[in-house]
Length: 131
Length: 131
DNA sequence: TTTATATACGATTAAATTTGTCGTATATAA
DNA sequence: TTATATACGACAAATTTAATCGTATATAAA
Image 1 (cartoon, chains in turn purple, red, orange, cyan):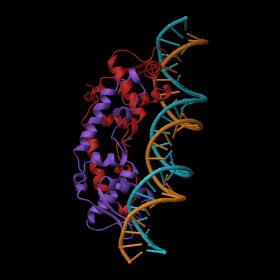
Image 2 (cartoon, protein in one colour):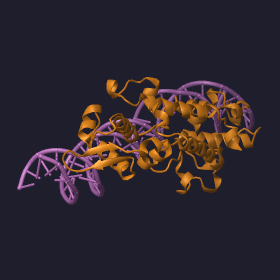
Image 3 (cartoon, rainbow over the protein chains, first blue to last red):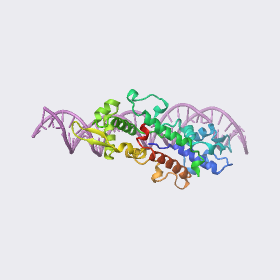
Image 4 (tube, rainbow over the protein chains, first blue to last red):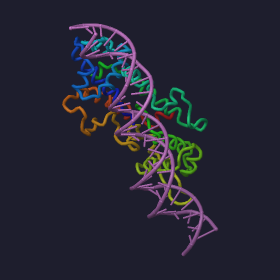
């Protein structure tokens, strides 16, 4: 449990590569080959990052992706939520109904744990973890 | 991602119940019925907690489980690791080999994220999250 | 001493989630 | 016009998690 997904792993790899090659235009194929990542899944991941303006995309031949200045300031929480949706250790944190209904006795601890994690991730940027 | 498992959820429910009924001896069947939790899976979960002395077990008819004084002082990290093993957002944190080998460029960020989470969980006890 | 009921624990099956693949559309530089 | 890049939805495979099954052992009470 508490594992990050491959999507997040691949996104981190791509972002770090783009940051280390600031002005270069890098294609999915290049990244895929360099790091041994399935092309299609990496493509979709970068599309999500692009639509959140974390990276910039350029279509057509000679196209690819570039790092945007927004990367460094992005919090881990935003980064994770772009790729995976709301950060919640249990679905009920964002009110998706509850299996235990009125007999639930763990709402308080669940919320406390979740708040702690969200607080942690909201106070860590991608720049913070790169050094 | 970053979801807790049912095992942890069930363990939290059981622990909270035992703490609220300090001196009572509660059987798995009682807990299972009260909270709508599958009996066998709850039984195994409590067995793990018992072997870590988080709860005390009593065999035979009229047997069951009791809260131990150790509960409140137990950190979230210990609690999770009793049930799920080492806390790691990626397996390579505890050196299980690496998919990317020499082309891995995310060791630093992965370790920073993981250290942050472990630090958080090591400084939160079960008592902290119950209030 | 027998019986009923509790925990203990390994093996297997079922369900859910995650990961990866396939197919097609669209943009654009050469 | 063509080749090559991103964009995006639908589907299949693999992995992980959840639940079930079966059996052994301890023990209080009849």
